[in-house]
Image (tube, rainbow, N blue to C red; front, top):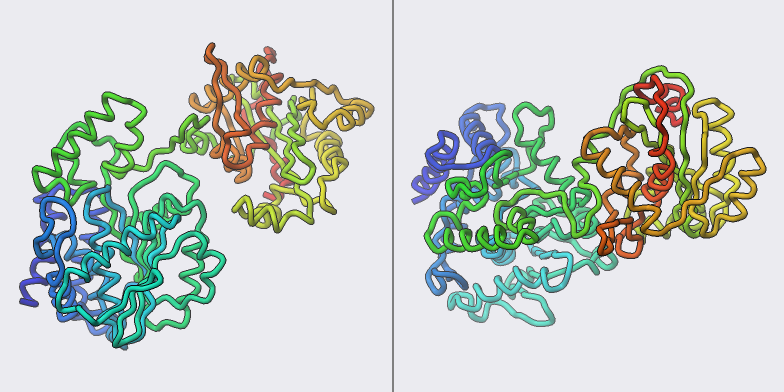
Amino acid sequence: MITELIARIVRYAEDIVDGRITACKKHKQACERFLKEIELIPNDDYPYYFDGDELYRFYRWARMFKHTKGVLAGQPIELTDFQLFVVGNIFCWKRKENDLRRFRKAYIQLARKNAKSQLLALIASYECFLSPEQSEVYIAGWGREQSSIVYNEVLSQIQSCSLLNGKYTDSYGRIRHKKSGSIIQPLSKEARKTGDGKNPSLAVIDEYHVHETSEIYDVLVSGMAARKNPLIVVITTAGFNLDSPCYTEYQYVSKILDPDSPIENDEYFVMICELDKDDDIKDERNWIKANPIVATYEEGMNFLRSELQTALDVPEKMRSFLTKNMNIWVDQKDNGYIPLDKWRACATSKKIDLDVRECYIGVDLSKKIDLTSISGVVPLGDGRFYVWSHSFIPEDTLAEKRRTDKVPYDLWVEQGWITVTPGAVVDYHFIQSYIKKLADDKLWDIKEICYDPYNATHFAQEMEAEGYTMVEIRQGIRTLSEPTKFFRELVFSGKIVHDDNPVLNWAVGNAVVRQDHNENIMLDKDKSTDRIDPLAAAINAMTRAMTRTETVDINEITEEYLKMMGW
C-alpha cells in the first residue's frame, strides 16, 4: 500500500509535467521540483528522504472521516491525487540527520470550492491527535467568522468518527486531545495583541488575501522559535489588493518555484493553481488550472459555468469570478482610482544629467498631527510628466501612526522618503525650508506652489512673502475632475514617470474616487481606507502643470535631485 501511494504521487507529478493533466506553469514547476528531488534521494550528500510510512498514516487518518458537504457528503474521504501530492510533500519530506520535517512553511493558493477547508481540517487534526509532542494548533483568519470555518470543519469530521469518541473535549472554543494535551484553537486579528504567549507547532493562516497586515502571521511565526518541528501553512485564494502581505508572499513563493530565479528556499513548499497569463477564461479546458478538484467532476463544472455566466451578465461581478474562481490576482477595488500595476509600470531608476526645469509643487497640509505631503509635477516637454513626492510626520506621533496606519513609517524615514519634525504636530517651517532648498540648490525652477486653502492661509502668506507664486486650488469636483482624470490617463498611457516612492505608491493604492451625475470625479478622502495625502498633493500640482503648453527639451529626472534624496 505504501508503494502504491508513493507511485500515485510520482505518477501524478509526471502527468502534470508531461501535460497529460492540464495545469498552470507554477503547478508544473512544483511537480518538476518534486520529481527532481526524488531522483536526488540516493545521493549520500542529499540531506532529505521521503517517508512513505508518514504518507500511509496520513492517508489512513483521512479515511477515518467523512465528507461533510457537497455531492460526496456522508462518504469516507478518499484523498484525490492532488491532495495526496500536497500532504505528501508537506509531511513526508524528512531530514536524514534527525527525521524532522523538511518543510517548515507551505503556501497553497487555490480557487474556491476546491476542498481547502477539508484539507486544512485534516492537517490540523492529524497534528493534534498524532503528534509525538504536546502540540498547539492555531487556525488564524482575519476575522472570527473566517477563523471558525476550518475549526468547525475539524469538529464536524471528528464528531462523525466513532473511533475518536471520548478521546477529546470541545469546550471554550478549543479542541483538546485528552491523551497528549494537544489543542486546536481558532484565532482572529485580536491575536496580534494576545498571541505573543502562544507556542504553535502548527499555524494555519486561512484566506491570507483578506489579512490587512502580516501581524497575525508574524506573531505565530515568532512563537514557533521553541518548537523543533514547526509548520505554518498559508492557504488562500487570490485577491485584488496588490499592496497586501499575501500578494507580497505570493510574489516571493513564485520566485521559489521559478527555476530561472536565484531565490531558493528548501524549507518552503509551494503550490499555486491559477490561470496563466493570456488564458481565455471562457475556454473550459483552462479551468482545471485553478480548480484541480472542482473541474474534475460535472457538478463542479456546472458551478463554474454558472459563476462565469453571472460575471458576464453583471460586469461588476467579473472581478470576483477572476479572483475566486480563476485564482487570478486582480488589481482593482470598488471605485479604485488607478490599478497599482499600471502605476508601478511608470517607475524609473534612470539617472540622467539634465538642466534645471520647471516644477509645479502641490501641497496637502492635512491635519498637523497626521502625514503632510508635498509633491512635484515636472512637464518633460514630450507629453510626459515626472512626479516626485516628500512627506512629513511629527516625531511624537510616529510610533502611534505606524501602529494605526499599519505601514512602515520608520523605514520610510530611514530611507529618506519622510522627514520627521520635532514635537506632536508638523512644523510647517520644515516644509518651507524643504521647498526653499530645492530652489536654492537649483534642482527645480519652481513656477507655482498649488495648495488646498484649508489650514494653509498662514503657510501661503509666508511663502508668498518669500517670493513664491502661490495658487489656491479649491477642493471641489469642478476644479479637480479634469486634473484627476488627466493624471489617470497619463498613467494608463505610460506618460507619468516617477521614482517608485513607496509612500506615494501606498497613497495611489489607497485612493478611491467619487463621481457626480455628470461623470466628474475627484479623490474621495472619506472613503479611501488609508492616507492619500501624497497623491492629493500631486493632483493639486497637476491642476496647474497640465495647462503648460511650452516645450522643453527634457527627457528624465536630474542626477542632482537623486543625490539629494540619497540615491
